[in-house]
Image 1 (cartoon, protein in one colour):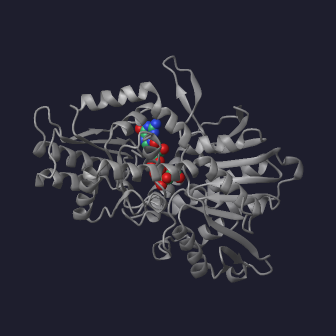
Image 2 (image 1 turned 135 degrees about the horizontal axis):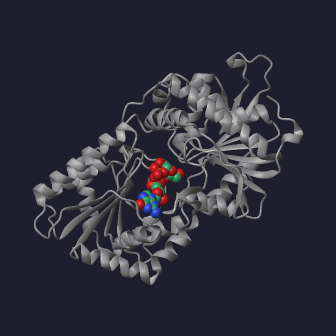
Image 3 (image 1 turned 90 degrees about the vertical axis):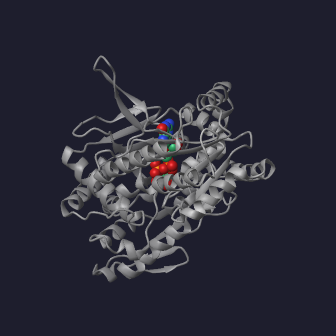
Length: 485
Ligand code: GDG
């Protein structure tokens, strides 16, 4: 399909993500309104979109809801409508039950269903058509994440005048795993429609380049992949070049730091410790309840530490916040019962009256409460089995303006590449994980402070605004490397 030039839009910068940056909230009286959804991506995009003629294309979050485009804070929001079947097929099915586990080291088995793939293709096409309609001639388009991997090529077919970038928030798996996907070539071809592909870690970019080489026969020089299409039977197709690079995402350091310094947050942090009985050591975990986050491995290590007598309540307690997530997907329901069971067993075996071993909360909290929890914790446990980046680790560091606290961080997170002063661990090695937790608890305050300050310097200088600027300059320059600034 060719979009006639008069059908082209007027927006010079277009962001496309699975979700719009707003959620629909229904009030008690039945009326509804849009509320900004919190999150780093929204903050980062907001900073780069302000002052530009910008649009955001994404799903409004409810099935079947046909909402006309609307303006908010100077940005045009363009809702994509999904039917209930598409929510099941494209979103819960292909995105969350096929791609998510496949891209996270098959921690649970991915499910390959042809009807979900058909739905994914259909919805990706709808996104590409919507972007083609709103983007001005020569506009820059930034597509986000694994839900939209076919959009770059679909969009290029409609609008070859656009500058197209994609960023992967999650890992890109080694070809030995990626190769399981029945539609692996179509996904790679979809991504190669972009001028620039950004990844969290250099290994993710390398995995992608290897997959293209092995499965499509592309060639590459440095970080640029060349694909003539002839390898794929596309006779006469123009060779295309796509550049890949590592652009690790970050957080809004300043706003987290400022929030954590407010008297309200500091008071609340003291209150949290007091309501836990002022223990010597508060261990904290905050994660979406997701099997990638290593919550079961963490609880296993904690359970053994209590069992060994290395730690005891009430002097030491674990506060585990698990934010509800993807509750309609069966692997997440299974995880919830496993975690519920583990916590129950630990508390049954190791708690006493007024001495709770594990405080487990299955809720989500406002940002202020998160900052207070970070302030209240002596050790944050971040133990994913695989995680693209892990922003919680960076938020903890940004909250510790006092230089206090220690971070236990899995080697299998993107954050571990940057936060080398953390107590790094392999969560599969339960004995090693136990030792690392004890080492973090027992670290001398002066050297713990040195580690924390070094991590703060890193996150402060590599914040989410720097990330967005870096990404956009690479996209503008692609397929060349951007000039050093
Ligand atoms: C994906 C990748 C990558 C969590 N609970 C609450 C809450 N949160 C916020 C955290 C943090 C965010 O959600 C979670 O980000 P993570 O990075 O830890 O993990 P994913 O959700 O899996 O994100 C990941 C990320 O994309 C960005 O590229 O780092 O690797 O998997 O900001 O603070 N926020 C509030 N209440 C909660 O209860 N307010």
